[in-house]
Length: 250
Ligand SMILES: Nc1ncnc2c1ncn2[C@@H]1O[C@H](COP(=O)(O)OP(=O)(O)OP(=O)(O)O)[C@@H](O)[C@H]1O
Ligand SMILES: [Mg+2]
View (spheres, rainbow, N blue to C red):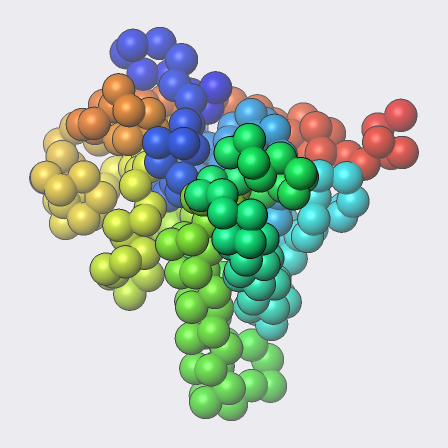
């Protein structure tokens, strides 16, 4: 359960929308939605956050595969995620399975992984210290390409992505990436253009404005049009505690 709509509890069905984007200005409640997603996620996580404070400084171990905030590290981790996707697809293809949950795929022992990228535009495009413009370009292109690979191929092999973004930037959400991020939550106040980009219609008048409140679409098959949404609340400490390695939570 990640929030509520008029119909009741809202959850994110990754079988229906493998990837999710959460869009809103600063303070609109993006990171809080991501915490609610993490609180209901059963598998492992990769946490990327250029601000570091929210998700980029978690202790690794247990279900936390990686937590990173440094621009080089973010690009490197995304490359590793794309390699993991590639290797999972290779394994599935070898046993002629089309999805990681197929009975035939059970011996592979694949577990679902959620890649969280908060402040995704910054995470992917921020120049790193001491880097030339060309080096930045190469790193940014590589990070984008890796993410795209995870978005396009992840569903079949149990790799899912949630991104937090301040606005539905075409540079980030253009073309293929946008199509893959089918589950969408818009929070706070959004411009007519932003709601058109997210929801294919000017729904700016319907934005509530309060943090944690907004519109959501396609979280489940029964949500084909945007509906009013309020995110569930879980504190940063509580969600971290759910991911502590067993030795530390004992
Ligand atoms: N579901 C909610 N219920 C009540 N308050 C909420 C909820 N979601 C967010 N808030 C309030 O809004 C504040 C900002 O939320 P959050 O940090 O998640 O926003 P953000 O969009 O990630 O902002 P930033 O750009 O600073 O990272 C929270 O500290 C909290 O006070
Ligand atoms: Mg935030």
